[in-house]
Structure formats: structure tokens, C-alpha cells
Image 1 (cartoon, helix red, strand yellow):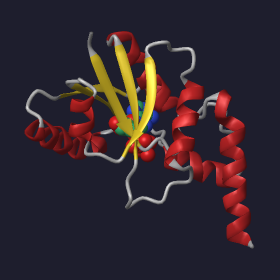
Image 2: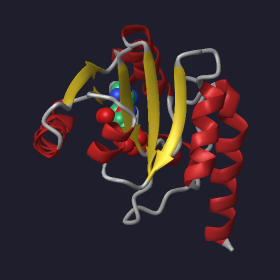
Image 3: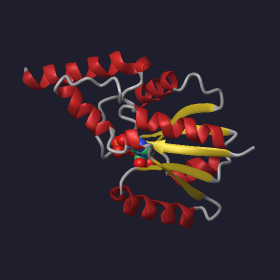
Length: 166
Ligand code: ADP
């Protein structure tokens, strides 16, 4: 059974992420989406909330599971018996950082390979930061955020805006 890991911040999960999840889930027997806990970042949603948002967005995909981890990605992959990391590639700007990460992970765990799926052209410029920025200006997010989690995202952006104004 081939298991792949799709790691990221997913703060929040977007239609771009979901597109990669769907495609990877159709290639591998099992896909584990790993919400990475990074102490240097200040996420809008907690790790547990992000796990819940990804779960609800991908609930129709039977071979997808969602977890969070603060471990080194290579160690997480090894502990789950996975030899493949899936990443999405948007513009060239993603490439250098991703290439470096792939080399490091392979050095830490030589059986570990990284597979890149190119972004769907609808989501080429989409990131979680774009969602947060657009939400702040009350732009329509329906093309960018899964329906299942739309209200959670709008509520959280509204809460943050209110706090900043107050
Ligand atoms: P971001 O905050 O940039 O959305 P994440 O850490 O949540 O970043 O992204 C996790 C993975 O998903 C990375 O491999 C990233 O390149 C990929 N990804 C993010 N957005 C998209 C998108 N719109 N299309 C394809 N891949 C994406």
C-alpha cells in the first residue's frame, strides 16, 4: 500500500490545497494530510482547528486522513511508513524553497522522495495569505475557500478585524 504525506500550514485550507489533495488521493492508496505546527508562525487557526477544517473539506475522500505534527517532516513520514511527500508547485517562486526542502528531507531519510504536482491554473496565485487578505476587505471568497468551511473562515477573519480595530 502506497502512502503519501501532504504537509503544509493550511491556515486555512484553500481550493488550491483541496485540488492537490484530490489529485494525490487518486494517485496513492492513502494520503495523510499533515498540518505542520510551526512555532515561528502565528496562525489564524490552531492546529486542531486546521485539522478539523481540512477534514470537513475532504470528507468525501475515503482514503484521506488528516493529522497534525510538530515533528520533523522526515520523521513523521517514516513513522507513518510513507516514502513520498507531495507538494504543490505554483509559480517559479515556490521552486527554490521546495527544491531545497526536498534535498534536505532526502538527506535525513534517503528513502524519502518528494513529488510535485503543478497547481491547477485556476489556483496558481492562491495562498492562505491571499484568502486572509481578501477576507479582510470582505471580497467574495467562494472560488477560493471550500463551502464546508466558508463560515468558519469568515467568522475568524471578522473576529481578528474587530480585535484590531478595537
Ligand atoms: P500557503 O500558506 O502558501 O498556502 P501551505 O504551507 O499551507 O502554504 O501549503 C502547503 C502546500 O500546498 C505547499 O506545497 C504549497 O506549495 C501547496 N499549495 C499552496 N497553495 C496552493 C495552490 N493554490 N495550488 C497548488 N498548491 C498549493
